[in-house]
Image (cartoon, rainbow, N blue to C red; front, side):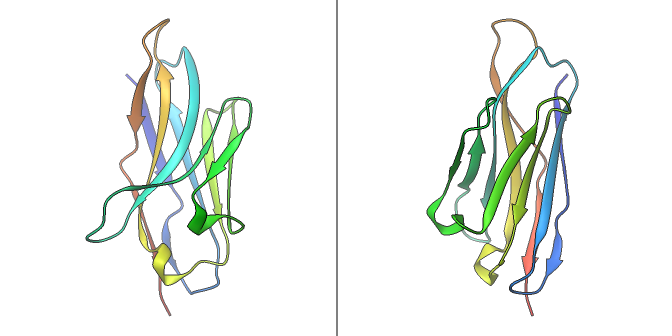
Amino acid sequence: QVQLVESGGGLVHPGGSLRLSCAASGTLFRVYDMGWHRQAPGKQRELVATVTSDGSTNYADPVKGRFTISRDNAKNTVYLQMNSLKPEDRAVYYCNAAIAPVLATVRDYWGQGTQVTVSS
């Protein structure tokens, strides 16, 4: 069984930084793209950033230049370094990953979410 477990959320002042982590565990034949999404109160879940298994990254426009996504393939972990945080970054952040638990059975997995609050 595959699990994604996030950590690192919390309360930070505007302009501050946080680093989120998400570790995949269980039966992992292969881990493909990993990423972060977020959902603010009353809004739909939106993409934040993705990283492929070879390190290629993609960012949503609102976070470009402030957030950095990275991964450690040996640890099956994806990170999101968030700098210059703004009140509008407040949301529940979810990690997701395309994982093949066994050969030829790829599916999308999601973490349980971690709250990020940006407030003075």
